Image (tube, rainbow, N blue to C red; front, side):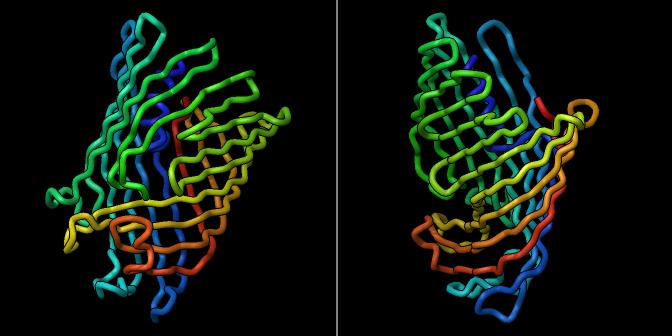
Length: 304
């Protein structure tokens, strides 16, 4: 069971929970250039089980992410205009098999296009793969070993999956290693969660479950996030276009009918920059720094 849930979790971690979200970051100045930049982001995620029989489980997913930029900024090294619109469109499948000895083997595959001109040519196509085996050592404990690769992450090389999953009680859940995950209900109405995915993806959240209001939650969060695309007209096919930012968020969630959840949030986004290069060490090439400021977001998601 642990191995199957881990497989679905990898797919959800890549695509997000099923539903739609929109984020608006108003105009902020671009450092060193006589212009500003604002961005409107939209995200649609879908995934659902398609097969569950005996010891086999399969789930498919689809993710469409779109970022629209409003700016006259240029990439300073190459002199090309900052992209007006960027897309990340991917579809994938997660499959797991439970062996007779209790081990679970899983695979998550994904393919699509992440670019300003998606599917225009072969150099904007992307494909990712994760393979793992979960080895149980108790009812709520397991070693998880494997490898994952995705070309549109901030570390575009194969990464090991090495972690120990442990759930000692209903209040504590840990995945110690790579990737790292921890969840702790440290008070009857308060839960803390943290996720770290190599190398520069961090999400931390504290949620308050209102005891007197059914289906209402409030939360505070910190996120260090990044996105990666392939510009269609780049001169070097190994170059990527990177986005990095950090966010402090306060939000409210409302449980609706049919397991839908409405999430309203606002916050402060900072340490924002974009660049074009082969990897993070190239972050001073074609770099565009954008000022800090407020943002707002609305999401409608399906909960499991």
